Amino acid sequence: MSIQSKQLEQHFIDTFEQLLPDRAGRQIILHAVEVFSRKGFAGTKIKDIAASAGFSQGYVYMYFKSKDEIFTRIVELASTGAGLSVRFAAGLEGTAWERIGWLTEAFLAPDSLAMQHWRLIQLQTATSEAIPEEAKRIAKAKIREPFEHLVPLIVEGQRDKDIVEGDPLELAIGYFSFVQGLGIARLQTAEQHSFPSVDLVLRFMKKDR
Image 1 (tube, rainbow, N blue to C red):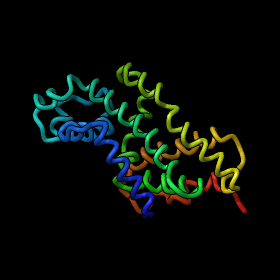
Image 2 (image 1 turned 180 degrees about the vertical axis):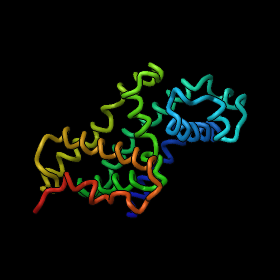
Image 3 (image 1 turned 60 degrees about the horizontal axis):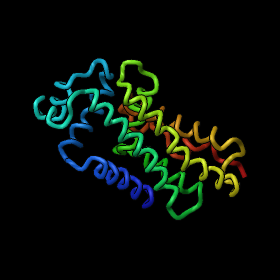
Image 4 (image 1 turned 45 degrees about the horizontal axis):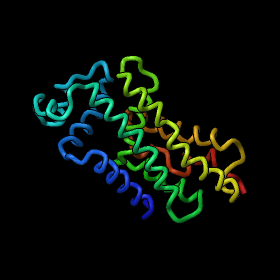
């Protein structure tokens, strides 16, 4: 992994800790992501999250009033983190193509906070009628933020003749669709060696020379 991708991975962690400073709260959230990903929103109970985190139900209730609040907080963290991660990548030194590659490498890392489950949570937010209305509202309000930072990178890459011609927004939508889809695939398979490479993921954007 490149130095820049490692910097991005650390940025994911730092952002998560800044947005949720309390260590126990972070542990509850991380285990809640795991449980929601396995059982879905409707099938998850506070006792499931507590058991996964190694806490009592009462301890979890000290931090969150309900599973609705936990899920909504996950969506808020995921949505905010997505925009911040792309913005941080866009600010690195290097060509636009290099920066997109580093971002993708960081997303694809096996332990990446940004990749493992959070994109799945956002996807569930967009498609499930059972989840809290506040979670839907937050996801809808923040959905544009990653695109606001990736689209200029794509435009720059097109000027550099590294990225194929076409609507930059459509290319950005394709990129994040791949990221979300790979997040789901990672949940469904333990075969890490079969996970797509950065070059394969970005092939649809690469301009032939």
